[in-house]
Length: 267
Ligand SMILES: NC(=O)c1ccc[n+]([C@@H]2O[C@H](COP(=O)([O-])OP(=O)(O)OC[C@H]3O[C@@H](n4cnc5c(N)ncnc54)[C@H](O)[C@@H]3O)[C@@H](O)[C@H]2O)c1
Image (cartoon, rainbow, N blue to C red; front, side, top):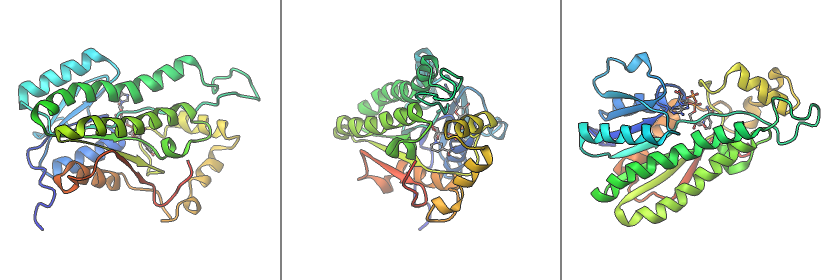
């Protein structure tokens, strides 16, 4: 069927849309003729001249930035159809480093605060600000990008996984609060994907350290044997799911988090 998703001219905010999963989501939404507001600390040159993409420099953990973002979007478009809470960071850290107590890889209060501020508080701030408009309009969709680790836990990533479990709980609770206003809230929890900006050398060094492995052994663990489908997920596969969930084709889906991990079920 032609134009099955019908996202033409929808006004959709994507946080962290300059890189990785967020960029794949922006690519898919503009292919579907939506207007995308890219809210990130930085832009992506692929989008700087694109007439369907409006970049607004935003730190999602800063309430002032979020208020400015919403004001600018409403001035320009008058309403918000959907938001995608995608911006996030990961800092692999052990609760206790038995080899070197209080090493750089032990979870510090500053690391904890940073993870919670961006991954959890950021989603709260944007959703509250956008949902005011959605509730008034009796229309809207909120997509929360979680992680398989939020469903399963993850060695060396307890604080990160906890922020994602919090996101899953936001999804369920907000769906219960907002359903009566025709606003849906859906989570998407990817497993192991092709490389994004998140998998930096510093990230791999830290995760390997927390699992007492070399980076090569860590990469081997990420290999095909752990994933029933036999390969990493593509960013476009996550973007396809997000586009479907935003569309009215998913009009009876709310309050649930979809695992998209090729059948892998341990973080
Ligand atoms: N890559 C994976 O395998 C994977 C798996 C599961 C879940 N996730 C989740 O997907 C989301 C995107 O991850 P990614 O792998 O694409 O990462 P990425 O590092 O490639 O992209 C993250 C984007 O978020 C932006 N960002 C970071 N802090 C921000 C802030 N304070 N305000 C605004 N923007 C900010 C960055 O500038 C970047 O453009 C994250 O929530 C992550 O937890 C990723």
